[in-house]
Image (cartoon, rainbow, N blue to C red):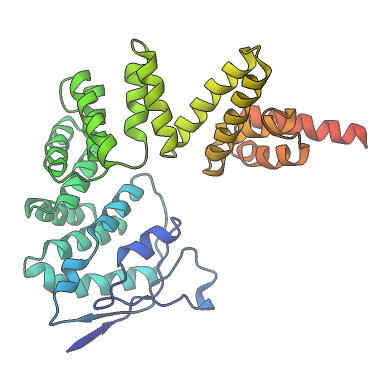
Length: 338
């Protein structure tokens, strides 16, 4: 028997992530439809138009990608947005759909319900369901419960957060070793232990792809082991960590400007400019400013004032003082020339 539930448009400023990943496509479980133009005035991606489920094939729930729900929890931490009545109605339909599965003890269903209640700001319901899923040995739920408890910044919750993160770490959930490492590094919810922090960051280098662990190891080794520190910074940059790309760019630029060998100087400045550009394209404002300076001055790239102005615009509009000052100066020079 096939049941149909209508999940029409979602309202969210986080664009594709929440709506697209809330219910993942599965040939036996869910079907995505493109959004219709009738709700163009409402913000958000609104990718889910309808969903179908085979009631007698519960494997659909088991196939659901819990990692996607985990990403939603990670993205909701600092979000502030309004949810319209249409979206609430449709979230309630999803709640009604998953509730029977949760009642049967399906941990993914409980995790899904917890995620929806988190989006709707029903925090007590979200935490209760999330804890049930975590206690049911769902690693992603354990990870998210740790993050949820850490958000409260209460000492007892921070201690419990470390416990759940440690449970999730057994399953090598991406990001958990970094969270544990940061708690030990800063003494949050536990005693300060730099060696334990370092051990967890090193474990994360084998499971995580965002370069944050390598970036933390760069700082931990910077004072006493500069060569090892440099190695970790380069590894973080390779994994496209924006801050690592920017910082490594600063190092290359400084080394280039101090070098008397013209060939080596040019090579280092080319590398610096390339790293600034990579970081800038990911939206890091300081890197956008530095790449704009490279374009303005012809450092590591061909001089191009228009390109410099283009890259200065975003950080200037976002309040980055150096970018605003540099953009105003370029505009004044252009006015004088005219």
